[in-house]
Image (cartoon, rainbow, N blue to C red; front, side, top):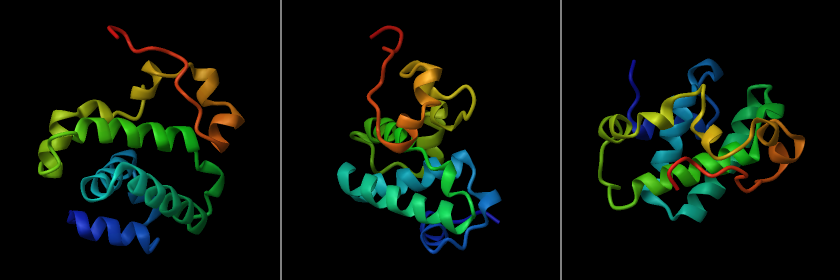
Length: 134
């Protein structure tokens, strides 16, 4: 069964979404939902809180990663600029790079040792690699 945006966000926020259904693509879609209707700062705060709550409810509190969460939110926000009215199917088709879990888009911005560090897991760490062509 395919969920609407509203159903997905509600299931995420209530922690009723089964953990195995909260894939990388679902993470990106929920973040996109927040960023479509809230400011970037509000969306980041709400997603961060929701993700921590969801992880804890699913026995995976240790999986939360501050840098990955914030960096992906900012990349999604950047791609939403001027196109907040696109449906998820069209947005995700335009930006398939956001949906690839491995190798992650973040590998263009971060060294592997940075992303795997305890510091990057606890707090947002600025990118330490420039993407090609910038």
